[in-house]
Image 1 (tube, helix red, strand yellow):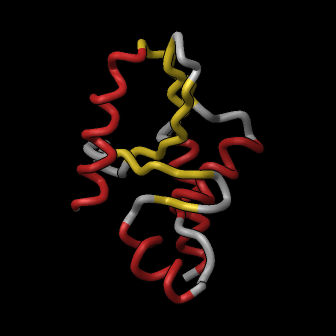
Image 2 (spheres, one colour; image 1 turned 90 degrees about the horizontal axis):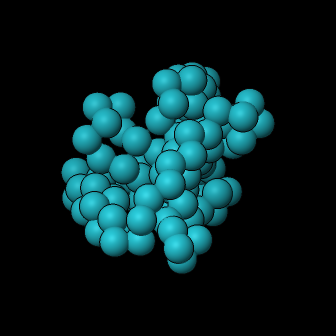
Image 3 (cartoon, helix red, strand yellow; image 1 turned 120 degrees about the horizontal axis):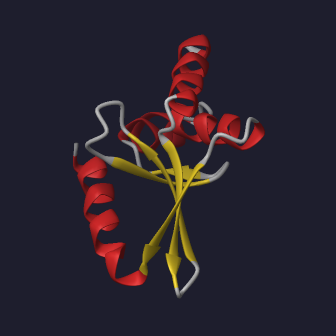
Length: 105
């Protein structure tokens, strides 16, 4: 299973699905990973939390490590693959809706 998570994490990083959105002028930053179909966004707090169901229901409760989204962020940081997007503060809601879609999947 660990090999599968590492493979999926690497694919997400290489596919530029790991993003940081910097909102201006507030400088609020969201760390996100796009789903494979790119219809949802998963909110992550690096090395601590992911809003995906795998993290919430399997990994966190059972203490079994990290989901591939968290690992993808680690890989993207190390390999300088994070896509940086700057947005106006008023566009925050657009991202929040996509994050909710990811949680409700």
